[in-house]
Image (cartoon, rainbow, N blue to C red; front, side, top):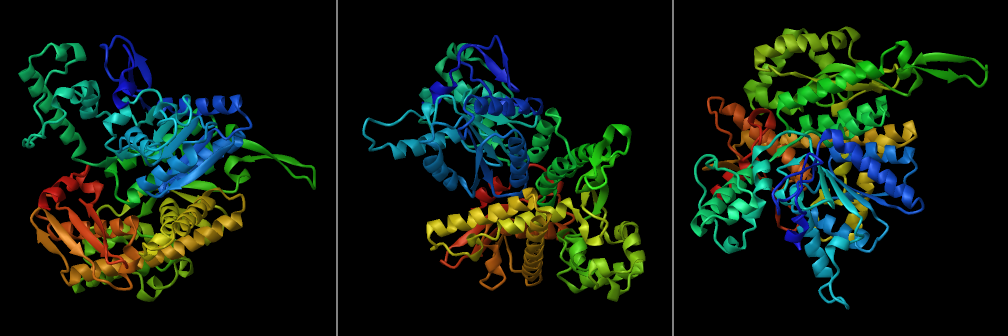
Length: 618
């Protein structure tokens, strides 16, 4: 029973620690801060030590770059400690229900189930409990208790940057713990403290009142005993006030700190920092920037923290050296850590040019969403501005069409400075961002940016059968394709063979270039032909069937196109301060459409309320 799980006595947990003295019946909140992430791993180790021959850990991973790199970090830690574990990719919440039914319910050895980049925004236990009830509807002996499935001591841990966190997940008791980024949220705090009001049985059947303009009026928070002493009318008024607060809380969506950044906190606490782990954290963080999921100042803060780590790990002082022994000569020497490893990292201000080192400068500029939307490359004037910008920098067009690695060295060396200097003349005021690069040798092609890795991972994840737009494929075939895509993306990060990693990475980069060309081409076509319609509070785009649109039958690729169009349309309405959501529909082969709605870049608008606007428009 959902309510019974929340009635934990007299104690209230805040930030992963019990606070004594709370009123009887108050719901405990299982929100763990960054400093408490080590508790997760400590429990994993204890459970594994108690049953060393059993697989006690199951990791469920969403199909996005941050989830994959966080999984790579966690599995590296588990392998170092020789802890048996299983990993399952999760495409959507329907797939999560299937994994629960097939891999969790009957596995009594499981003690820790870790959900990476999934689980936070839904009432997880209500969803899984409903699935169990469906399974046991005709079970001999009656339905099983969800609280004892798969085992009474099994815990679910959510490490997910999606927001808002479902209030129910924060108050389900000790079996469900949400690893949080410590960012305060007054609405969530108020809803947790007053969840007993929302659960008042006297008002469960009432229809919701119409929403009021602006934020709900602040009211004194009432504990269960104070609320019970109110008159029926006062309780009704308090109930509707909290309900309006709930509507306000769920009206927006946003992202918290990257899961990989929180996982790196665990790595630090365990004193296992390395260039490899730091690189993975940087890739997870950059995933948020590349997909415009966080406000820019939040990204910069986290990126600068990681850059400080680069300076520490790649320092050449005595404290950062290691012994390297040559078996042939018998000589042992001390070398800097990054020299003794297979890679070194560099802190840089990266240009906002997609996959710059993997094709020509001109292609990188034309296929960069940032440059294309700011210059308006879908029209003649924008293309002329691009050529003018190149002329101002003194870059011959022939050189700009060369592969980056074959450009003249003097052009490559002066590229960053000149692009920043002259880019401001064309409205490109934020052409760089703080990031990390990985260098694995002294060859030019061995330098890879964190954004390059995000694009490569995304392309591998989108290479599953869903990209074809077919919905009549056998379920086993679809599941196998998803597993293969996920395995390839994970292999790119974890394979012990450098050659294998580079082969998968190169395939991902080539596919990513193909997807970028399709996004820019389709976006330019929509804008140039004005194939969009303004419908009150949102802009509607319905893609026409074509070879290009077949590449947009997965949520990730269609969302990228929607963000591109939203930002491009924002540039055409520079005098407007209002964010106008974009709703885009892509045709599929079974005559259905995949529909995505976005508000635009979080870099400009912060938390997105686009879903509310679109809902009202429809």
